[in-house]
Image (cartoon, rainbow, N blue to C red; front, side, top):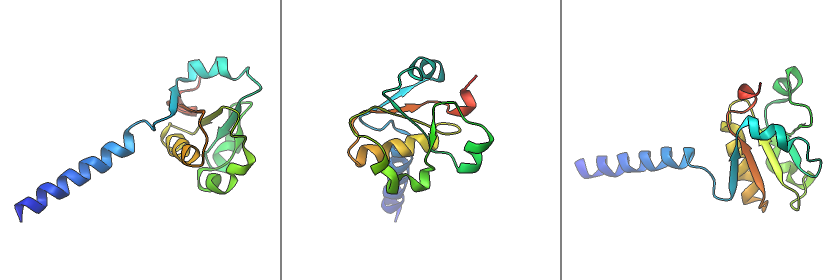
Amino acid sequence: MEYLNYILFALIIWFIVQRFMPTKGVKNISTQELKAELKDKKKQFIDVRTQGEFNSYHISGFNNIPLHQLSENTDKLSKDKEVIVICQSGMRSQKASKILVKAGFSNVINVKGGVSAWS
């Protein structure tokens, strides 16, 4: 019985580590670094917050595709262009980055700290 507790504990730790580990193939940048990226019109800027959050405040240049709709809308994005993803804190954009990589996007950037870190 104690052996099963160790296995369960190990699985829980593995799950937690996987949730917070950076996604392979995804670059993370700060909001300071984002300021320089915003000038590049060849890049795609996606805000994955809800439409309400986006409407109340968003960074100019970003388009809104809420996280829960991203999987169905990857065809609206070009796989040939870099995709920069942001959310409120960086958690949803990290999930969005994983979705994009699984969908075949090879140039994905996650903004650490999200809109909350924007000044």
